[in-house]
Image (cartoon, rainbow, N blue to C red; front, side, top):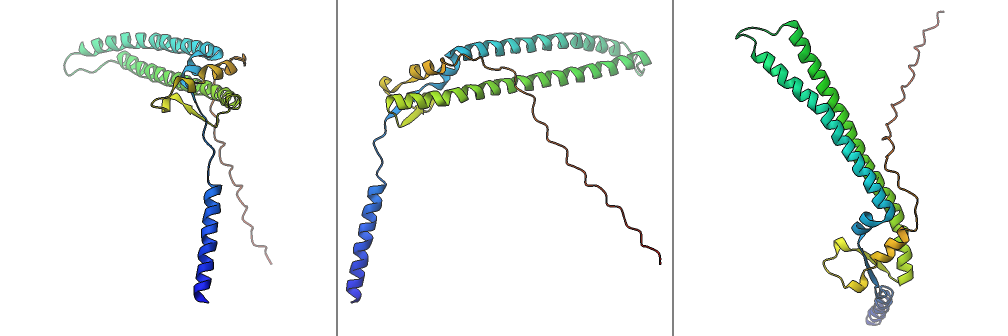
Length: 208
């Protein structure tokens, strides 16, 4: 009886494995390849956005030069004035004030340029997010049209036949949306300050 039970168990296990193996079989993949970097460079609204971003970079560079040139000139003048002080002497009050003013202006310029640079980085990331929001539906649409089940980025593929490249089709779909991209990212959200708990008033013991 024990042998019969073990045999029945083995048969049942074999049937279970067979069904599981059949269920795990996957259909043959139909692969497409898309060059997303090319789409980011060449799509109509992408080109316009990239042009505006380049203009922002040029404005940053111009502002950097406008702030840096006077500071450099003043720094050289201050160094000359300090070198002219007799050995063992101290700068007078006017020179000390010039040095303090120079340091304040340099700190303000550094703070302004850092803020502008961070805004530029946010703008670039914001544009990329908008492109991704348009690119994904376009890829899905081309996948359905071409019967593809897998879409790979050409940047992650070592080699692929030209017949698998659907970049032009995806690019055409992306270009159907002519709404311009916003190249000015919203300011970063500030974390709300923690609410202060109201202080509980201490109850005074009631007199008898």
